[in-house]
Image (cartoon, rainbow over all chains, first blue to last red):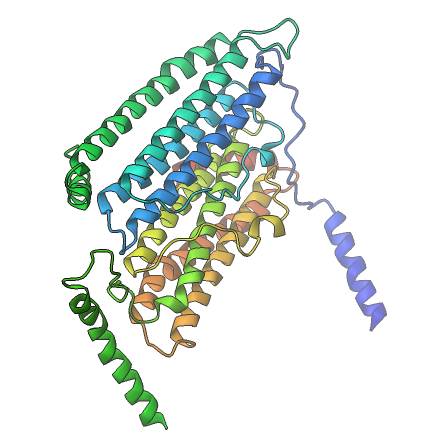
Length: 217
Length: 221
């Protein structure tokens, strides 16, 4: 019996080593690297920022889930947070696309995203406190984007220190633009909601939710 | 004995209908803070399914990130396979949105979402996404089979192991996952077959170009 298995194994080995090999590798390429000119410190910051956007995304996801509960029942607010979660994910993908466009992300791809992203907070006292937490979260993301810009504008990790004009312009014109508009929008909503709730508490919150759901705020 | 059990279930159901009403009557005229804790959307077998649905939803997000990494990998200038990039991006988007829909479903049945990798899915796998075209397809096929099995387990848990019959949950699982996974698994297995046949020493490199071009124009969902 053993010898039969051995012969079978031998046949398999011969079969696989014959000319019909399954070729999974693509040939080694020799593409000039001169155009790949992002610097080390800046790349590192950009990669970190991808993860930051995804962390923010999962935090929004937890907000959406909390306000979707039947015993909380704020469907408008919940949907708003679910949308924000997908928007943050889109930001991460935009950053990834930028890095790919500049010839990056050819190595260490598996470390780019920590796949188990548990949101740190999952319950809130009320809508106001969640919206305030969202505003703080956005401010934190903005601060981190500014930090990426700082590093990429003056990357001292490379010698001589490097200014990545194009990326800095992209982050400033595209990302910060969206951050500031988004922050103003949330701050305005917090203001409206707090005023609606001043004398009327839960009635104000209930009405706010319906207004958000109908897209009237 | 059986009659007794059936009777007691009926009684429980009958009482359940009154619990919220009783809560509400008791609450009227008392302090506002009094809980009407029986006035939730929970009924049927949702409590038996809740934990596994939470896990299932969270696994969707993990898989969405897995596919995003694969999509990114095939989009770098050395790989340069826009078709594979699109395939894995479509899978990533799909898992993301299905994850959100699952959270909404859990809450529609009076449950809540828990974000946690309780099964240590991430740590139990090798987590390498620097893959060749055919091994990436193989990985996706394995992932989708795991997803399909997880859906089946939830179905089984409700259909066979729950005292309370809850056709709403089993129907939801069938409609949203069981049939869709079947199609997806078949498609990925087909891709795997094609690549296995095409990747010979003579045709391999050009085959991948043509297969990638095919994927660019092909709709996964």
